[in-house]
Length: 234
Image (tube, rainbow, N blue to C red; front, side, top):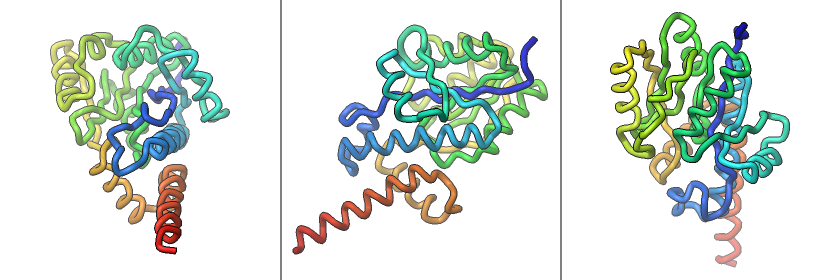
């Protein structure tokens, strides 16, 4: 019997300078972008826990699992996907979570550190009320969250990922499969200079407890920049 509980898999890569969040460079240096990616992951896992869901991470390989395990500590279990690519990662998350007896599964991107936990609760509430799929669209045309009570492989296969049509294509596939869809409020992920600027503004104007790891890393970068400027002037 399936448990009346929910699991959210955060899709993540091991943060490495020069390989992670490269679209943030500039304005960030490669090492800064990697450090920020690690902070994003920590805050994403905290959002999942605040939404009262089990938090898991899904990654590409056993090598990445060992790096991520050191990074997140006991905050989440780390799972390796079957296959390659993002579509396989999402499909693997649903297969694993449902096989482990969870009543519903969600997959969440790791780069929306200010995401309100309420949106995760709304997603699982929607599927509990009869929606087949709850989808949270991103401002860039992707999606930050997909939750469902069953695996729907056609939502993940042969998708042109990292394009502005991902969310709309997913919704079109839901319609073709006669899946009842609940659309969540749009949010944003942080993957370029413009979205990084928006993040800084949101953190400056929002509640102080939002995205504490991200906030701390960004504050450290500002202090480092000020120190460097002072040293050059001296």
